Image (tube, rainbow, N blue to C red):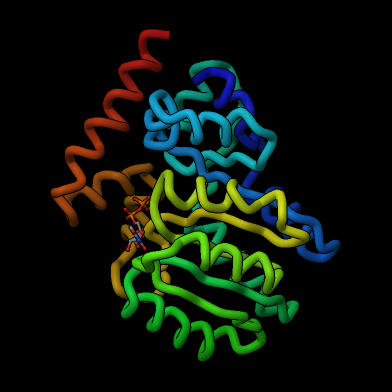
Length: 234
Ligand code: UDP
């Protein structure tokens, strides 16, 4: 696990966003993996996810527990860079530069709401296509995305499916930022609320999510608590 924590981007969110802007401008390709305790815990028993973490993609600390674990290992990771923050940034930069976008994931009504919102609020973005995340054939959608060659592709199917799908096709990708954004479409579409700023500031976003959706407790235990216990032993 230590070797994965070592690969996490250390500098500030602003610097990271500048790097993304440069990639987009120069038509480079980048696969962003938002690392949280769930990613690391699943990877212990999942060789495909392990291979993704063993590669050389762009890893950021999505969860506060990951930032803290890095600090404990004397890795100077400055701050969280969450999937939703990256998604919001990418929408803004895409709007400023008329970049193209593909959205894949979430429920049909959620993706429709999000597409409407983008059409209204980010009018310069070229939406090349979108698909809900409950299709029979995920590969078919990914093949279509690669063919369309968007500047930005956000996949919101949850960990680890979103990462595995991008990984499977990333070799064929010519340009663009590809990122798995988990539940971000639910929030960006307005279907779910993100935690109030004070929770985010106090690093208690996880608590807000559990209170709002108590069924998350099991996931939280299996991933976050076990992860923290593991790091503590180090
Ligand atoms: N999802 C999907 N297809 C699936 C399973 C999940 O599109 O087969 C979507 C789901 O609707 C939600 C997202 O994936 O929008 C996962 O959200 P969750 O809050 O679990 O992710 P987190 O942000 O906690 O990683």
